[in-house]
Length: 84
Length: 376
Image 1: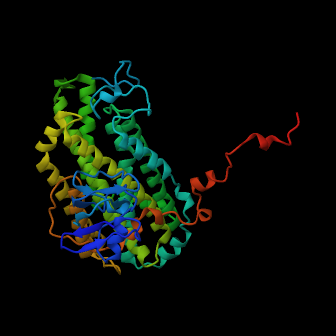
Image 2: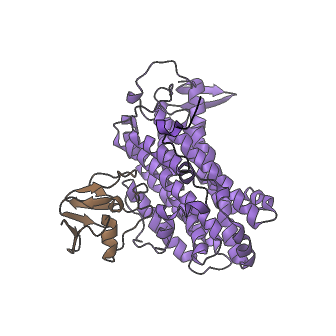
Image 3: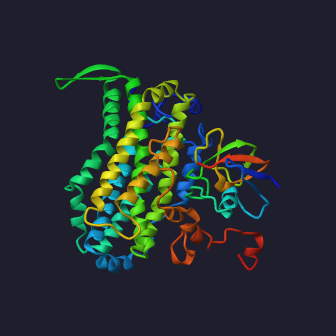
């Protein structure tokens, strides 16, 4: 079960009950910006400090190195992220 | 280099830059230098919709019952949206098609601009429904000072680019005397105008449109003008795709692998890019002042809309690698997000004419057994 570490030190376990990382973050009442939730608008862009995510569907939005879209991804390893 | 509609030069399209290489000859999509534009085309086509599919008849009653200052907010916002899509429905074609060099990008530009024409048609659909005199609404767009002020900045970069391309394609690089006037153009200057134009288009689609969406959805949050909101939701879904397209163009340009000049230009124009964002944000705040001049509405006022302008400007700048220019970090209208979720857009298929639903009605599976009772 990969862990998701936030910049404030809190760790969320991604136990598979949430479909995406965005869902998992929202269940913990974390505010992440979002629009399309399908990977084409890029509004939910977050920083991926360490670890690896995989995409459920390949995002169309531009994702630069060190960023990822939580709306269409799941963690593969333990990850550390920063929500803008 | 003069434009030709079917360039006879045999070239490897995979080696052309996005712009200012050879004009495109064969429209082929079996290979793409940038697969993203092919994917954007596919996505945009899957989004196809027509304004008539959305029933806006209840909006007429809602509109008649609005107090005057809210009528002003609604109709001014709609006029502004009409201006923006009038520009976007034609300008990408006129400005970018004569200089594009990749078939997938060429078709993306055409697909993008076409969807903007659907948006323009939907404004007529909306206005016809709420007003017995739609011509008055449209006629005022050309007379309304506040809207025309906006038009100036929205179109300036397009017009500079188009003017430069005309000169370059007719006369080539250098200083030319035309009808007694002297004009100079260089390819580098044209590329600079292109970069600034794409930047200003990105600002139009990523900030200006979203400020107007906020106003449309603020009515619908109160269960008013819901037909209009349904249409704006479809428009917003398209716009998200368009601004992803311009963000990709800007990022490809800045990276420099496509055209080394563009990376240099991106650096040289950094200050000007910041200025474009800053000016657009200021104008949108002025616009908020005009919208709410006679009073606020529940859920939205001048200050909240101004905060949203700052928030969305920051977030759009960061998306293309720029630094935020405002201190606002929180979205003052978080409810807007639920209006922008794509899977909420399609209501029950039987209630609206959704192409995928209709296509699904036809059974394409045929095997030999289906002809079993056929006698010849």
